[in-house]
Image (cartoon, rainbow over all chains, first blue to last red; front, top):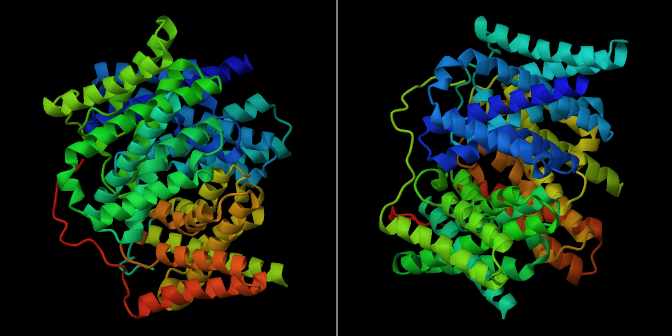
Amino acid sequence: MHEQFNFAIEVLGTIAFSMSGSFAAMQKRLDPFGVLIIAFVTSVGGGTVRDLLLDIPVFWMHDLLMCALIIITSVISMVFKSLEKNFKVTLFIFDSFGLGLFTIIGIQKGLNVGIHPLICIGLGTITGCFGGIIRDILLNRIPLIFRKEIYATACIVGGAAFLLMTKYTPLSYTFIQIFTILLIVGIRTLAVKYHWQMPKFYGYDQTSEM
Amino acid sequence: MHEQFNFAIEVLGTIAFSMSGSFAAMQKRLDPFGVLIIAFVTSVGGGTVRDLLLDIPVFWMHDLLMCALIIITSVISMVFKSLEKNFKVTLFIFDSFGLGLFTIIGIQKGLNVGIHPLICIGLGTITGCFGGIIRDILLNRIPLIFRKEIYATACIVGGAAFLLMTKYTPLSYTFIQIFTILLIVGIRTLAVKYHWQMPKFYGYDQTSEM
Amino acid sequence: MHEQFNFAIEVLGTIAFSMSGSFAAMQKRLDPFGVLIIAFVTSVGGGTVRDLLLDIPVFWMHDLLMCALIIITSVISMVFKSLEKNFKVTLFIFDSFGLGLFTIIGIQKGLNVGIHPLICIGLGTITGCFGGIIRDILLNRIPLIFRKEIYATACIVGGAAFLLMTKYTPLSYTFIQIFTILLIVGIRTLAVKYHWQMPKFYGYDQTSEM
């Protein structure tokens, strides 16, 4: 059941990321193959960078099912463009759950090969966030993550909570995992609902650069 | 003869990619070393990403000849800037042949290490297209491939034809290869001649983002 | 003493790169975690690409101290924003020394695994420059290195001098290393002082693209 739970969340997360990539690409008026490529890198980008950094096999190179899922989701997004409007909330929830699970998967894969826990939080953040970063770079806009949302922050807080709980509490792994995912989803939801933003560096009017 | 044919096409393709990178960089008024770096990543970018994904040695790390070829081509492009105007058609043909062969090389390298054929089409597309994508990202413009040309489309169609023919027909490998390259060159040439474009998602006027 | 010298320079270089990333990110009004991520990639980006290309373990995955150093430096930069104004010259010197040492480290790591010296100059340049390139891509501006400064040029000239001296002179390794770093620092300092620039390709008014 534990495995099935993970698999279900990963599928939902991948679907959400593929949709988010497809919609962003359509807004930029790319052609269908462009949309497909953007959907793909949004979904697999974070995990790919993580696997390259860990020097382990890149996960999607042997996972035809995942590739098919991304492509099918992207095609459906193109056919039913209006999905975005109607399923906005659903998509946001999928995306947040995916972000939570992807963060945990990143941390876990790092721990498996003996990386220090603090660096693993970075790996988790990379897994969760880099797909969206690469998507925004390809679409030539400043990565959304750096501008608006409590996104990386949620990953880092969630990742830290996950590590502290696995180390210092006797709680079961599954419980900790679910708690972490809900924490990340909760932070993002509250942030959007109450317009939380991290403080920014206003009044920084220097134009000189090193 | 088969090997020599491949080698000749690869050399021509590399020259074309190096020139295309050099001219794009000069248009953005980079200095000579900037032009050199852009020429280099345009030529080797796709193959580098492919080799990293497959976890095989990055091809140009041990290929001094290829590196020298790229540099020399870039220097020649800088000295004879007007080449672009006069050899536009030649360059387009080189570029298309290179694209075709690079796609096939990507597919072949993937098959060699046991990747599923469908994922190999993706690898072929990456090999053909990512050099140009990285070039455009470094020059801070939205990747050309996503905007205008039948480029990725040609790779995907050509790659699919290549795989179907190797699997289901008794034709010789060399014949299939030549046919695939000509198919990719043909699609691109006809697309440019008759202003083919993939349909885009006009009327998508939403400005909201996930 | 030789090791300690290297370590000290590497620490100073990392601090400088982390500061340069932090200040650039604050100028773009990113939130604190965004600033942290930019500081991180600026510091480790070049070495990461180098290690991926060489297929050796990514250096910071097992170097908690280096990660901590980058984060602490970035936090200090955020707290004392005015540091940039007051320590501009200091930062420039750190940055140049770091650039010099990073270039040499890149060359040395390449030679260690049997890469041809000429390709190693490229590796050194990548180690020195790619952190700043990735920083600028993430902040959606055309990489500074391609526009203004004698940066890659200093790496390439310094790297070539380093290789020629190790091969053709009986000078001690430490001496050659110090000389190379001072050469790179010197080129950059003189370039800034006297407004040296590489010639650019003005008068290139074609707007057509391949």
